[in-house]
Structures are given as C-alpha cells and as structure tokens.
Amino acid sequence: MNNPVPLLTPKPDHVPAELVVDYDYIRPDGLEDMGVYKAVKRLHDGPDIIWSPRHGGHWMVTRAEDVKFVQLNYEIFSHEEFMIPRTLMPLKPLPLAVDPPNHARYRAVINPGFMPGKVAKMRDDARELTIELVEKLLPQGHCELLGDFARVMPVTMFLRIVDLPLDRREEFVEWGIALMSSYDPAERLAAQIRVRDYLKTVLDERDNGDGDDLLTRVAAWRRNPRFQSEEEVLSMASLLFFGGLDTVASEIAYIAHYLAQHPEQQRRLREEPEIIPAACEEFLRRFGLSNTGRILTRDFEYKGVLFKKDEMIMVPNNLSGIDDREYACPMDVDFDRNAPAHNTFGNGPHKCVGQGLARAEIEIFLEEFVGRLPEFRLDPDRKNVEHCGSVPGFDELYLRWD
Image (cartoon, rainbow, N blue to C red):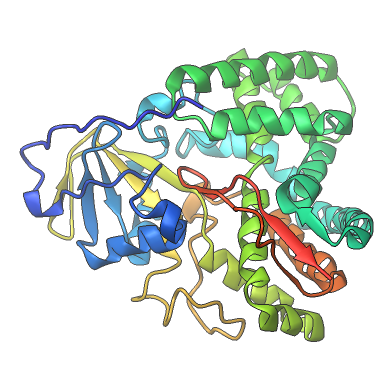
C-alpha cells in the first residue's frame, strides 16, 4: 500500500504550543519494538488533549472520560467526517456518516439484522463453524490465525447475514484490506468504487426480492417514501460490507496473541468456562480497536481547550480502554475486574450496530477455539507484524501447540 509519511501542518494560532505532539496514529513511534498498545500508551504521559501536526492537523483526546464525551455529543462533534485526514473516505457510508435525526432512518434499515433473535441463531452457526475449523487445525500443530480462523469464521458469518457467496470470501477480504490498510485517498476511492460496482449488481438483483438478508432490506429502501437517491442504498450496503470484514478478526488476533503468552489464562478459560462473558468484556476493554474522527460543528471550549469549527478530532478507542484513571493496572488482563463500562463499541446513536454479534463471535472463539486446542504459544520462528491506524491489528499471527 502507498502510505507515505504525512507532512507537518503548521500550528494554528489558537493552539497552545504545549499541546502540540508530533503523533502519527498510523505509525506511532515505538510501534515495531513495543507493539500498538504500549506505543500509544505513552501519550498518557503528556496532556489529556493534544494537537498533532500530522494528517492535516487534528486534535486528539487521550482519556476515557473525554472519549465518551466526544462520542455522546454528536451535536458538537459530528460524525459526518469520521476519517483523518477527512479526504480518506471520499464516499461517505450511511448511517455512519450522518447524525441524528437523519441517522435513525438509515439505522432502522440495518438494525433488524442484529436483533437478539438473529444473533442467537448466528451464535449457533458460529459455534458449528468454529468446531469444524478447529478440528481441521488440531492435527497440524500450528496455524496462521488470521488466514486459518480469524478471517474465516467472522467473515463467513457476515457473508451469511448479507447472503453473499462464501466461495468469494478470500476475495472479499482482500477488498476490505485494500480499503482499511491504505491511507492514500486515490487507493481508497478505487477500493470503494470496486465494492460499490459489485454491490450495485447485487442490489439490483434483490430489488423487489422477498429474502430476509440485510442487502435485500437495503435494496427495499428504494421503495421507501423517504428514499432520496441511489447513493443511499449503495452507501448503506458498502458500510455493511466493510464493517463485517475486519474488526472482529483483529480483536480475535489480539486476544490469541495475549493468550499465547499467558498459558495460565488459557487454562482458566478452559477450566472455568462460566467466566467467558466477563473475559470477553475484559478483552474488549484491553484491546479496543477503532480510532475514528469527528468534525467540529462550531467553536467549542472544553476543559480549557478551544476547538474551532471544522477542525478534526480523533477519538482513540485503543487508548480509552487502557486509561489508568479509569482502570487500575489497565495493561493487565483481569477476568475478575469490576470496572466501568468500556467505550470500545462507542456511545450514543452511533454505537456499533453489530456489537451483539461481535460479542457472540468472541465468546465462541474462547469457548471452542481456545477450549478445544491444547495449550498454544507464539511460533518462535515466525515474526508477527503489527500495524496501527483506524483499525490496529496483525498482518499475520503464527501459533503452535503440541
């Protein structure tokens, strides 16, 4: 991917010099040596709110309290621009890139696909698929987790939700990676157009259809009295497509990477399966993923810092969950932790619509993948490369077991 180092943007006059930190969220200092979370955690040694001269210049909150405040107050911190720099997402996905009240009309199209009854059925399907995959991997004594499982089970479940061909799974994942791992606007636009061209064909085929999959529901929006343009259906379909291809796979990889280095935690999950729901929440806190932006709708002063209209502000979930003001020993994973709710899925109207399914898939991974494998470890002969950005993760993750 073409990811050039961004140029420095001059500091605006209203930005105090002591808040300027040369921080690049795509390639933070220390990433290769320390990994994503230790590298970004160092920001907690500085101001709670910083201004970075990278990626066009943007604000960034670093504490859980402030992440939640920004997420909740969409009237001030709008979701209409959510990528930094704002040129990264030229085609805006709905309902993510729109605020209330219009947000609700598009969310109502998607919500039924993630209701508790639907998720319960998908949980059963995910369990069946996970057992099948694990039984194939067991005799090998090793795996590359992303290619062999983390990009197989969650993506397969997503493809079933939208009724897209399972035999094109690897191709669809490549399309998703092309978008999520590139920070070149032209490459991102090309990836978006490729997916939209494909989805338009699918939506046309399902127009007037009677299926209950999510893309058929999106196609039906064309007949809604509030329908305004073809852009609406393509935008909703694109959000579903890209939203289902990356985040759960990355979360599972971080969990596996941690467990491979903590065999005592593996044993506890196998011996005490009743703690798995709590363990899932603890992992979601510890390995918060998405780092999104907001755009200021007006001048606003917060905690003595003046934000100006049209400025961008980053909301880093990977920092929110490791805030030592909110969580004792935040870098530790404690299945017995009694802690405040995390911000990983967001807050307010833009809270992740797929959070129920994500939790179900992570719990199934802990129950069936971890539960059925013998004690596993990192492969000492392979290097596991991490990346940062809007969704941190591993490029590959190699595990071994006896």
